[in-house]
Amino acid sequence: MKIALDARWIFEKSSGIGQHTRLLLKSFHALKSDHEFLILFDDEERAKAIQSEIGFDWDVQVVPYGLFSLQNQLHLQRYLVNRDIEVYHSTNYMMPLVGFPRHRSGKVKAVITIHDLIPMVYRDHAPKSKKSRIYPIYSSLMKQVAARADRIITVSESSARDVQERLGLNDRGSGKVNVVYNGLDPVFHERHSVPRQNPPEILYVGRLDPYKNVPQLVSAFAEARKNLPPGTRLRVIGPPDERYPEAMAIARSQELFPYMDWEGHVSFETLVEAYRRATVVVLPSEYEGFGLPVAEAMACGTPVICSNASSLPEVAGDAARTVPPGDLLALAKTLEDVMQNPKLQAEMTQKGKQQAQRFQGQTMAKETLAVYESL
Image 1 (tube, rainbow, N blue to C red):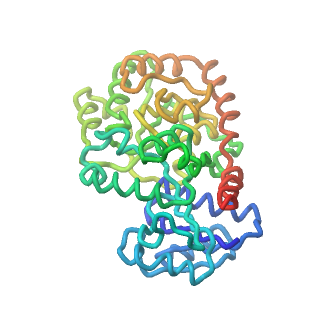
Image 2: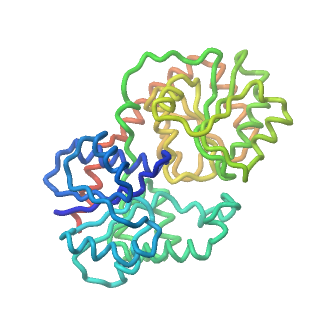
Image 3: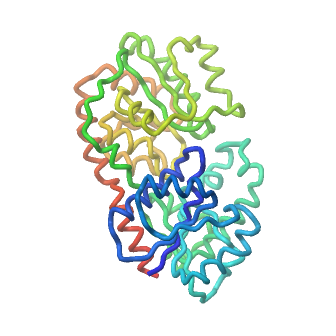
């Protein structure tokens, strides 16, 4: 089978979708499949860097248009046909709608990964984001993608239910939806001897969008701080966002800045070390399509506190302590319970490492290939 994987989702700045796409390439390469791959980029230097990093010798093509361009809509499908491609996979929601009409019988089949439908499930998830500002266009686009894709991959049962319910897929159409859990880079599973941070550290990894509930985390830290081990710090890793200053405002009003560390984008190596050095990782979101920080932290042997909403119970299993999203006092109490109890931390570490074994890159790659082969 000739498969085109769209690696244009690997942007210059690291992103969750980019890491997902990179790991899928790495895992396909490790499988040594007999299928032929064509890898699409829109930047020659990035193509060379990724090819050198992973070491694959597949056909690499740099197309002269981006994912969201009109040229992509008009020309990509013909480009794939001319190269005898049988399956095209976009690792995020965008596909050439013009080239893949409804009820077609063309040679090229389309597989689309939809990681989440946060803008549709929580309309006020990030009220100042572009998707919220153009919600009618986003909603229409997603329904068109769902109708035209031959297969849809989602990364959790929670996301699969949302895709079926929100995108107009009836019982017959829902058969095209396949759940393939995210894999983790093998480095997260490696044994390590990195010491825990001293004084102890609570770590949050992610954006500042309102649905992430970072203001509640800051408030919970303020509430619990007097009962936490002396010197405990809160470390926030993620891109700054001037649109959502609430967490910063709470930290300022509570005079927490001396006890917090705010960081923007960090290198992959810094992120892995941050997970390993933290005493606990917290993800208090209202909604996650998967919740990578939960799985990454558990693989690193770090206890996790997360909300009990959407996909997070699937990913965390019984290895994490969970709280209702937005319940500030419950989160503060859980922080105290975990941070004060080394025995509980050890139990959570052991369970977390076992749970994280479910999320292997090669498992993700094998299950993704099975979706291709079903076409």
